[in-house]
Length: 545
Image (cartoon, rainbow, N blue to C red; front, side):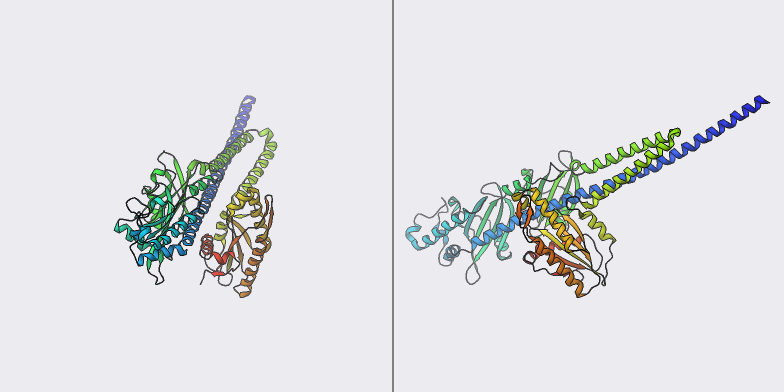
């Protein structure tokens, strides 16, 4: 009996032991499944947020570079307009009304006709004065291919390069009509041919023309300008992009899908073959975007684009996918490794029953560490580290939570630092950083009830929820905006010296559905009314009207 009893007790002990092992195994499996799910969720969330942040960063850079190109073109147009208004230009072209200008030039050998000085001494004085003016004006313009004055049929009468005088640049009637129609239908007589390969120098230039009219408003001739774009392209390439070393720019004319410039110079003037590029060029998008593609070298690339509407150009910034999403990959690897470590700890803690209490304490510390890591990641995703204000990702997410109404509208004021890159160039990056930090501090002080966002490298947006839709609320918002403007426009002390920054300021009101397109609207207003945004004439644009 005693032996039977011992055997029974041993069997019962074994069953209890097996039950304990089974319970521990179940707990372990549950812990592993839960932790694996958490790791998966964290990996997906972190990957998505860092990916969006990388694309937003590239899109902002693309938009900034497009603005640089647009400013370059606008300044060139102003230079040509200034050249066209000289009396020497009109005096020369007025001669076409009383004589054939071909009599004054040698079309075969180029230059002035040898017998013209004898036959037309007074007219040649006018011609020589115009040539001298052309050369003198051109001496003050950098990267110049040439200024020239020509007849309405493009006979070159003066040129910064005298060897070109006497040439007719548009001998094909169809191309001549295209040019003439472009000037007649252009903005105040200006026809911008865009960035082309010059037939004279075989180099890339910005080419444009302006018609010259007589006192009756009839066209009597034209002036032309060619400026080399090498310096512009070199300046763009020399501007570093944080986190991306291998990048390139390209630009396509939406009118014919041909490359205006490309890092591969052999593609310039060639039609784009990438279906995404052709699709976006045809769509003329109002907002920046991005797409991925496989390059000729077999590598995967990411391209962000923005459309320069005034000239019909699609500007793109291309970079290897591995570089663009490098931070995303690092964060995912970090989260996975961290998760694996946690899983390993759970395994160790689960099997060390005698040290369960110590294991629980370690697990608690690891959980706290995980929460701090998540908090740090969240801060990095939604806050601008330099200025300690919310970033563009936070702006987009905040707008999704807001439901304005007619009785409680939202006001948005944008403060854009004009030509911010020149501050960095002239005073150093530390000075530029100081301007950004000071801007954020002043905006927080001026809008105590608002939320300040840094939505671009040199751009801030303040969002304010109005108590009501009264004139009082509007006046308060306008007063706060002008107060901020007054403080920002003054001299600011920086590590590089005292800097006076200029800001473009725009303000809108919105009472219905909100989204991040508010930023694009504010930019468009600033671009369409630059004088009002620069010199304090701040106006409210009611987007509900």
